[in-house]
Length: 602
Image (cartoon, rainbow, N blue to C red):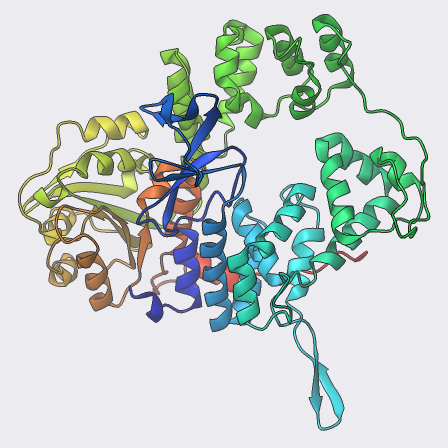
């Protein structure tokens, strides 16, 4: 589908299932131009005395020396922080949707607030807080007739309503997003701000002032945020907006010593002593373990307080688990450390760890499985990843039958192994009794998946190699005998390079009546981006074709959400035998979402 022909609904879906993660990288990396949606590729790297090290074949190896331009072998080295290319791409998608339908963009943000996609929430909150619909009076003659919609209220609500995703670091990140030069330029071109010299922050400053004031007036909330490790972020917020507290207790709580400004404008807590931060610098390992068990701090605070002379030890990690300092997410992330210390051999810790793996909400466990030694631990992590993706799409796959067709023609030579790798990461998300899989070139055969796991998918695709011509219709024809139930919608999912003629007639003859196509587009040997068999056929049939990038399936955080959004996006077939569709599409859900309202105190 040509992007210019997409309405706000279709653009929203395409944004949700494209490369939209990692707005922020918490570790250094290398960046290189590529053909992805954002135009660059990022990979982790470490700067050492002998040069830049990066992962190759799952091992950290020397990559090369930085030159005077901060590059190594054509890759640019970057410190941790905002990923400007991703920010620009995501911001542009939201701007395009807002231009088509202001209210839909605000409802999308209101819907996104309840979902798990933090990066998208950050960009939406940033945009909504600066866009031009801000409740201005509408004049009729010389009188105010009414007031325009205030969609900045939605951005304000996102940042002020209770949410684990909008903590102080994220509020600072929103400011960073708006300060990215490409974003500042977009806002300037749209006329949101008047300054050419400074990035436009819209309502962000007032929102942060309200956030700080509410916590000052409710000391327990401020103490809770400080205890969670956000002390320095709160100070940065206060500095960014020039916050003036109502009393010196605000500074005392933050242990923030005040020094008089050169112009003498400060009036509060100047020179007053503040209590020292709790320190473990003089404690030995046993004393640190006792402090952990007694005070039960979260694991991030523990790591921050550990003296270098002691470091992270087996006893300290065991004490932290006993104290409940590890969240489920922490336990999964630190699996290699638990294995290294031999803690997974302890029955109580093993049981706690297995429970955390089974409760996983994303597929990071599959990524971590590559860094552990024990096969039993690898298998358990992969099992957790399989269950995470199945849980993520469980609701939306009800009432839908999925037909997956994989191109194994000669033009897929070199891409077929990557295709099989991508397939293994998501096929287990679909119930086996409502999914049908085929491989095709000029002929096709069905592929039977006997077990709903990555291992089951990998086994089903063993021994399949690329060769022969390409007929997408063959894949459709071999699966045509599987008819959907009367209450089921149909989604066709293709994995291929589109080096083929259109196959509209085969789809019509099958009688399957798909509501949409999903496509993981693999770049083949010949025409690359010029081929468009799947997209052209969708256009001829008058149905949407949603593109899913290969990069999505290299990111364990994105896979469950992408598949869930793709399925939820599939249009619902209108059935005369039912009063209303059994399944509510994502777009209908967004349209029906009430606009977020600010909390009463704001």
